[in-house]
Length: 316
Image (cartoon, rainbow, N blue to C red; front, side, top):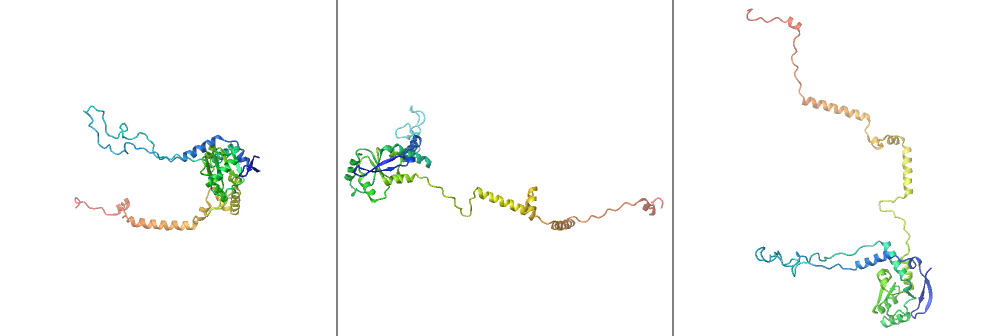
């Protein structure tokens, strides 16, 4: 396991602390570090550059001269991009340069930067000796630690009041930047020559990268989240219900829906309904269709022989 010497404010060694190998001894990965640095620089851009096109520049409404007959080149506006004072072709417009980066990839990049700067880390026990927030006292500490004149990144966790005091004392020194452990970033780590921090801040950094155990999923309001075992129990209950109701199970096998079978009307009721419908139909037909008169039947030969023959006018 990697270790680091803990110094006092006079530069004397007090004791050693062990550093987490998963953070300070990993092999630096250039890819995530490069992406994290590009992201930080891009997100810091305001993207406010703006130019005016020919439609946005003031003026240019009237045609400068007539189209033909003057000998000059034809012109339609004084605000053409070819003219002085005209619009700008394909000029910059306000835009957002920022882009996102996966959370795990950011953690890998920060670990890689810490591992790459492991030899430049200076750990002190604390800044309890700084009584007043004066730059003179901070410079004396730098001289004792032999880091004067270098780019110093002061990383603090602000658990004590002395951290605020050293912040006020050191922030005015050229080349010094003070950051909280939550704002630790790849850009500042790469640009610094020395990383000055405290023993408590190292512990806070290691705690920040600890893998948090996953909490079991809680039941949502009105919904329950089932696991594999719960689904097996539900399937077992369904099979038990089907066994208890053989009639329903048999219909389900045939392809019938047992719910529809129960809701279906009984045959007796069906017969009664059919009779009522038939009566209604006959009544409606009787009303709609009037009775036809029977056509007179033709007399048969026997009936015709019984009737007396009509006398003609000649016989009379």
